[in-house]
Length: 333
Length: 243
Ligand SMILES: Nc1ncnc2c1ncn2[C@@H]1O[C@H](COP(=O)(O)OP(=O)(O)O)[C@@H](O)[C@H]1O
Ligand SMILES: [Mg+2]
View (cartoon, rainbow over the protein chains, first blue to last red):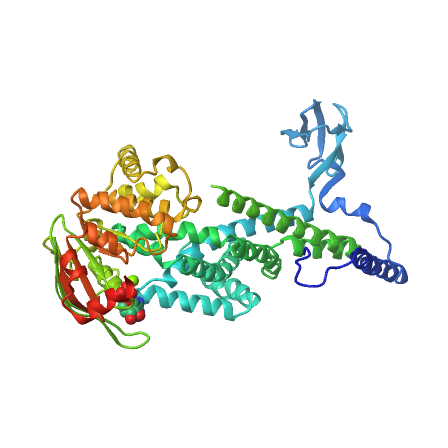
């Protein structure tokens, strides 16, 4: 905050002193953390974190037959097995072949050695979190606008549905909703699908729906407030020109309302990204569950949980920057 | 053009209020009728009943031969024929001046974009604001905004124009430019129903002046007669107060 003139002017020393106090308190927190970890003899090993993002591993390609190597080239090994059948075994890129043509191989022998590269568990978790959040945001916007419009409708059927929806969702914990979607709705739907001979719906979609429906209720309230914040004169002007209710909403009220509700919407979607961490309970391996698994297999909880938090920060920060950009563009037009 | 018969309007919130009491009024084609009266006398309500921004429970309002109070009428088609200019302009702030004037032409009249823009530019020209066509409404002064609002209503080619205190929200130096635009419109033969406190305008432009008080039309006569020689005590008291 800048000096507003409402209070006595502050001296230079005041500013410097309190900046110093701020720096000291930050340092104190960090020092305490460091001190606590040395007390419990925690060994920081940040070097072990990257492997959870990207796996690089030396692996062997093993024979699945007993037989003889007939030929070797850059892309494949040809083996004739004991029943005289020939098998082409494809080689991974840049593999180091360990056998020459003519050698005898037995089941389980190493044929080649290669470098195995794949995304690690944290990167996969991050990707799932991104996917779930993105889909839930899109569906949440659609659901929210629909119910927001229903909420301000003169027709009691959609209006009461909207009221019930918003109250039910806002009045129950998200965790309970997730359990209901997965263990109640999910079980029922899967049973019906199975009876109809159709495949199950992946858990990921129940996660997306749970988050989208949850967010949609809040978006609906934000949209309702946005619509009601547009001055009545706007509706009257549009209708006095002969525009229908729908035209007036689409072309006059909603464009103004949506512009105004950008900041609260952004806040809602940032919450959604963070709430997606609850989806671990329905066997979706998003970022938080991935981190938990990584922590159990390593013994580096501090590094991994800090990394996890940092990744969420990157996601939420990116989203809020993006929304700020949209807002600025909307204002400029 | 407009025929109002036994129009009654009640408000129930915050308390029951009989806002219009059995109003009878005719506005003929090409006529400019000015309504004056103290604040709260029901002038705005009467105007808003004509294009049904307020729904009156009793009476009839014929626009040409269509009854706007008939629940089965196509109110949007009637409204397209009745332009309205508000005290607070009510331009669409998210659209440019030109888009403000073309929006309803495209949505309601289903005109082609080029045609709508041509019509809009001609109207903006006639109210003297064509050079601001790409500006945003909030970059305009009140007088300019109100002239855009007039162009926006005229773009529908309405048969009647309603003005509800179009100059009351304006700084004094901008009142003239809006009244000029309205004067031009009246001279051009537009049928107009105007609520205003600009007695000079009423005296000069109106074919008839109506004095309303307490939801009742007290007096309906030519401007010369009403201003110089009011028949009713309340008219006289009102005029003494404001002149
Ligand atoms: N929407 C409304 N709800 C309740 N009362 C209203 C409403 N609009 C106007 N009124 C009342 O109706 C009366 C007439 O109002 P109005 O037509 O605005 O008067 P005028 O335009 O002549 O100043 C006033 O007493 C006003 O308070
Ligand atoms: Mg009024």
